[in-house]
Image (cartoon, rainbow, N blue to C red; front, side, top):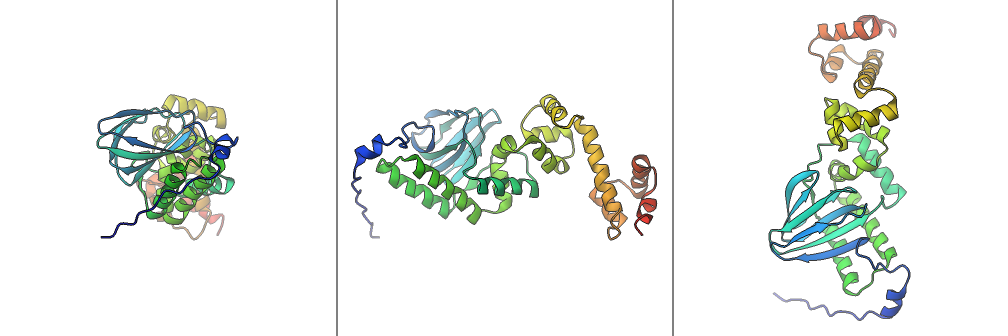
Length: 289
């Protein structure tokens, strides 16, 4: 097999690049790459930044305050939110990229992700990661070229961050995107928006607090501050509103409502309606017939 040899290009005016006020001189911003020897341990300093970790070669073990440890093999990427305590170890010799940012790249990407956040169920944050597809590899390959030639302009890093989000939107399923970014979105989306987007996706308040990433006690306190009520009472009222709205929609059969809201039987459904609304389901339905 023929091997193509690519000669390294000479970077012109390198002193001008290094002297520019937009030159990224500290390694906590944008893209950084790291070669890690087998069995070498490392810490990832968050500096109040979100991180995407790309494992390009080898296998690494990551430990976090969110989980005991996870193994990530080559061609896998994973997202971590601000203030996560991260450390790791290279199981084999590894090459990784870190991409750090303190906010969504632009309003468009922010709105897309937060829109998906309200549309799709979010699984518990398992930090399983996603495969690094061809489009994503090409972005990272191009960063290799720029880093090799010491072109570290922050505007370049911003454009490449935008390109990363563009690849996500073009080549990854929406369901996969929302679960991938959930560790970040759970911390950045407005608390009220988080509750409204997710309270119907869980069975208990404790599950909702776990999804948000805090203790049940802290979640209850935060909920009281935002809604002036307990999560339990608020969720009961919201459920009653949804049940009544469906009862007032003639085309929806009672059996569908019973199934959707997980009533154990028709009599259970009828008892619930009498308690919440003072009348039976049929009496409510008659008001719109």
